[in-house]
Length: 410
Image (cartoon, rainbow, N blue to C red):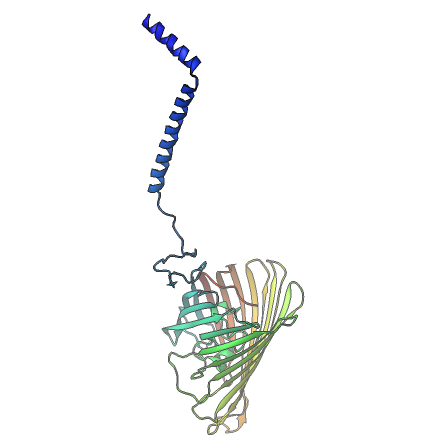
C-alpha cells in the first residue's frame, strides 16, 4: 500500500511540476560537458608542441641552423647537393710504338658539394683525385661562388675555376663526348692533365638584351701558371686576362649552333716583355628530334702568338673537329681529327727553320644506359712529327655519377 501511494505521489508531482525533471536533465548534461572539457584539456597538455622544420621561418632561435638576429637568416629549401664523378680507364698499345701505361686505372675521381648559399649566391666546393705521371694527386678542383641576382643582366663568378677559354675548357673530362685528350689541349693548354686552364680569380659576364642569345665575358686571374699546377706558381708582371663572346643561333625547334670567340693574354716569365696572346674560335652544332637519334658536331681551334725578349718565339696552332651520332636510344658512334702545328722551329739536323706538324685520329662507340653512366671503346691513331711509325692505342672508358649532377649546357 505504501509503494502504491509513493507512485501516485510521483505521478502527481510530475503532472503538476514537469519543469523539475527538465532542469534535472539539463544539469546532468552540463555535468557531462564539463567532464568532457576537462578530459580534452588534460589531453591537450600531454600533446607535444608543433615542430618547426628547418625550411620554415620562425621568430625563435633554432640552434645549429645558421641564425642571425634571433631568427632564421634564410629559408633554406635546398641543402648542398652531393656530387661524385668517377672516370675509369684501361689503355693498351696496339702497335710497335709505346706511349701508354698498358694498364687499368682511375683517371679522375671528383667529389664535392654544390647548392644555394642564399638568394644571392650559388656555391661550389669540388675536389679531384687525378692520375699524373703514374701517381695520384688530390687537389681542390673548383671552389667558387656565383652571383646570380645581379642587375642589368650581369652574372659574376669568383674563386678557383676553369677559365672560360674555349668550348671544351670549361667542361670536365668525364663530360666530354670523347675519351682521349685533343692534341690542342695536350700541347697548348695543359700538358699534365689536358683538361683546361685552372686558376683563381673572377669573371663577369653580360647577357645582351637582344632578341637572340649573346653573352660577353671578361675575366682576371692570378696567371702565375698556365694549365694545371699543384702550387701557387711564381709571381708574374701581369695577371691572366680572358675575354669571350658566345652567340647562339637557333635553326629549328630541334637544332641550333653556338659560336664562340676567345682571347687570352698570359705572361710566361717574369720579364715584362714576354707575352703569350692566344686567339680562339669554336663552333658547335646540335640536333636532336627524339630520344633515338641525335647529332653533335664540334670544331675548335687556338692560335698562340709568342713575344720573347731573349728566347726565340715559337707560334703554335692547334685544332680538332669531331662528330658524334646517336643511332639508337643508348648507343653513339663518333670520330675526331686532331692537328697541331709549330712555326719557325729550328731543325736539330739542318739548323733551318721549319713548321713541324702532329696529327691524330680517333673513332669510338659509346653505350649510355642513362645520363649517369657511360661506357666507351676508343681506337686512336697518332702520328707525331719526325716519328716513322705511328702510335696505335685502344682505350676502354667507364664514367659513372653518384648523387647530383648539374645538367650539361649547350
